[in-house]
Amino acid sequence: MILSPSLLSADFSRLAEELAALEAAGATWLHLDVMDGAFVPNITFGPPLIKALRPHSGLFFDVHLMIHEPARYLRDFQEAGADLLVIHMEADRHPQRTLTEIRRLGLKAGLALNPGTDISPLRWLAPDMDILLLMSVNPGFSGQAFIPRTYEKIRAARALLAEAGAADTLIQVDGGACPENAAPLLQAGADVLVSGSAFFGHKPYDARLAAFMSAARGFAERPGLRAARAWRSAAPHLNP
Image (cartoon, rainbow, N blue to C red):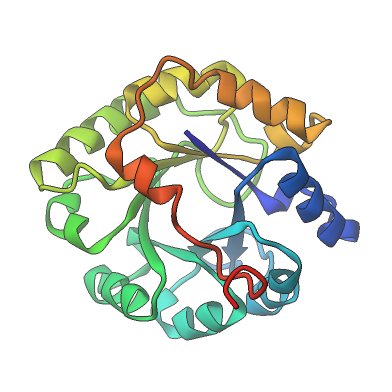
């Protein structure tokens, strides 16, 4: 399992210190939620913040674009230092084209589905993505309650990806993940868990990370997850 702490729940008055504390605790990914106030009822940040953080962190920047027509901004986020760009099926008229362009820019590509969005298009889009993000809350705000039917959706998505010849595609779950439900999420087929307030609200970070990781004991890692551990950060000091 990979845990991707959500920056939205960090202390924004001391972000550089927060990122350093995550790395010291053993975290390897950071989830950055970009919201435009139109696709979702909230506004967060954009490429300038990511660009400002990039030189200070070796974390893998997992950028979740909750914005309309994300294809307009792919290069901006690539130049800012994103490692993975996840677009929403509901926000893009041509997701296959956008996923292909993300990869052409040298980034990992992901597709996100809201709780009410059916998984059937995965049959046709699976070859063009590296990760599938399943929202387990409705996007826009942190601290929401986990939607229990997500377990069933993960199992169905895992089966459909296998049928489409994309068994190595990662499944990420975003919303309400905590140490108490991590094991059943992994059992259903998840690989990457996003956690905001359930992580940042429980210091020290190394102990909280250990609580999440203990839930992964006894679960064999899929080959796709082992490969993802080698995905490199775009941090300049790691890629001279």
